[in-house]
Length: 202
Image 1: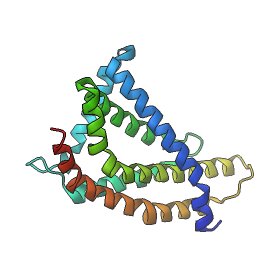
Image 2: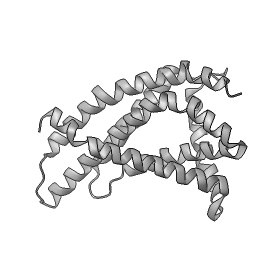
Image 3: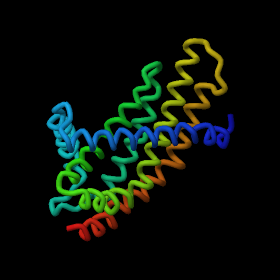
Image 4: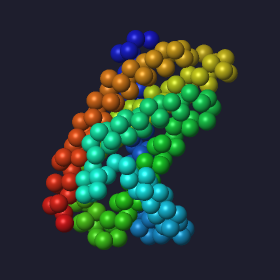
């Protein structure tokens, strides 16, 4: 399988992952905002834990460290892909779910203030960099799922049209030449443009 064929192969999974991401995000926002099943506190704990982990990415004056942010986002792509080595379990799905839940909680917090605040902060605070960052994550996850699927089929001795080495090396090439550039541009937007846009909502 050539690299171009590989990229075509992951197109459909990437789109499906993106759709799943937005569905989970919307459901999480609705559940958090309405405290359905009484899980708002649990979702808030997830957000608090995530927010606390961002300490190393933020300067004392509240600005974001560009290099740290970009490296962190790139690390997410490699982590997601690396989890694809584990057969049968499709562990990379956890990366999808966790990121969708976190954004869902953030939108839920904004929703509790007002729908207009939620929409404005989503459009100005998430979309500008998210339009590149999220596809990078979706692509990395598609590569991870294909790797996991290939390893699983190989273990079960079922027929498949791609070898483990092809899934591994083409996946790494995709992360390096597609996801990393997207994450670099997204990181620069998040550091230098997104804060300015968010000031418009204050």
